[in-house]
Length: 221
Image (cartoon, rainbow, N blue to C red):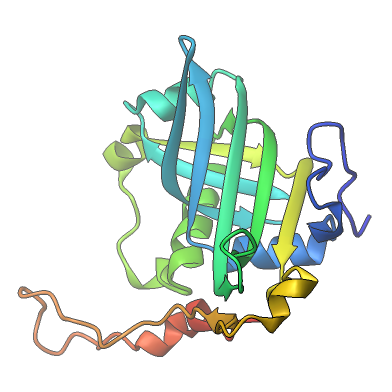
């Protein structure tokens, strides 16, 4: 299937014309993002925690300390909500009410599972690392046995998924178009600047080419 099936929990009801269920578009948003927010309930209290992630096919991977309350709670098989949002532009209207943002966002609902076998766990950690910096896994020392033991990896199937996208100019009330107020969009771009070497970098170590992160600075759609 090329699209995710909208469920009662993922169907976009507010401004449904902005809903996106197409897998390619959902994956593109997830692949461009860097930080996700994990929402869950623990002992009747809500929590939303930001973390790094990686995607392989229809699976989202997240990791952290094995002592993390967040990950240990999620590993118990509770319902979780993971979101990723990309800001593309400020949308300035002629009225305060119609100000908005151009954005792309994804919401994933489901139950995360711990990845315990060494091979799949290493593959998941590589996916997360290379998601942040492509090719980085092959350049660095991999995790040793103690580090593997101290790290908890969760996988979340991309089953209940929806995206929401806003593009275009502001939409004002018809009578407000006569107001002498500037209106339009102000694009927002992510950029990377010159890399700063660590003070203890060995002489002769290869330099880091920030152009490898150029996909984070893609043009606003």
